[in-house]
Length: 411
Image 1 (cartoon, one colour):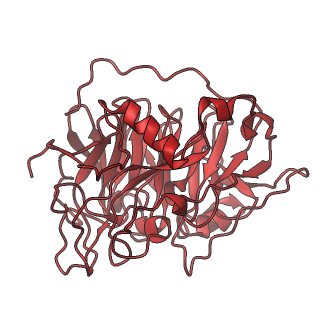
Image 2 (cartoon, one colour):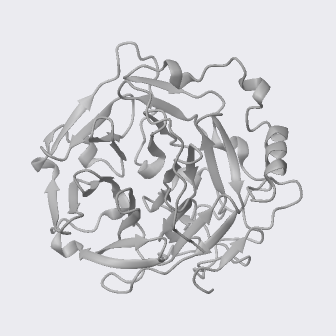
């Protein structure tokens, strides 16, 4: 398949799909399926985040992703869309949590799901591909017969790039018997409903692909930084190019645990931080030096550092990282002091999200996300559980409309 070639999904009859030429069909289809609020439904209703106080959680009723599974269901168990080493991203243009996952021997479906913060509803925004190989194939192929990307464990490898309005994925464990890692980079365009394959990651130490790539979007450079097995790289979506910025050998000797870690960027202090599996690692995005810290070297509570792939985000309101690994507690991580602080729920809180069981759940990864427009968080952990909202600090967030990208072209 040629680089940058767009492949369009061909929907089944009556199946909604986002398209630049079918907005009316999409809206009618979603309302008909009961998957979004109509204007009449929303009239006079207040949003739960309007009254959610600092330190409180809210469980969104009737918000299980399983309610919008495709029928017939692709091969495998769709609970593994979230459960099997899979993460998410947050679309700040549409206010959507994006979930995409499956892979290895768990689930062959490659459909994209989005949970909208305004309507508090899931939709299946794209897919699945037709003719998905079943049973689990021996051959590990990057694409399905329709040319769209095969299902994979997504780990922490997904981000939304607002500067070009694209959903980004790199790497992952493909739908096949041995779950080989992918070296490919894909962008999805929600306006056209099309995937486009980009440049593969550079070859080098650690091979082309890695199961647990760590991706984080940098709003300063408007690029994605990506940590693979050994190499640390910067992806420019407008130029469709990678630049190698460092090697994990410069960072420490703690081992390659990326598939059990989560990453986020502090855009002000210019730090790419990854945490989990007993370590905190920090890339400096100015001089690209790297430091590694064990849990014993981090002050305060070590539960986040020692957990597998916790939810991990940078909060621009408090200017610290925020982590979640289960229950009603959250944690802040101060990169300046290398200390973790427990933030218990407010005394008025009445909702406690479930705690992941690492025997069955392989990590939260990117399914715990900050909502800039609401100064709040969204968390989705299992397809058969409701979605949760959380507010850490007071304030309404940035309610201004995202600026339209200028001078950038992505094919």
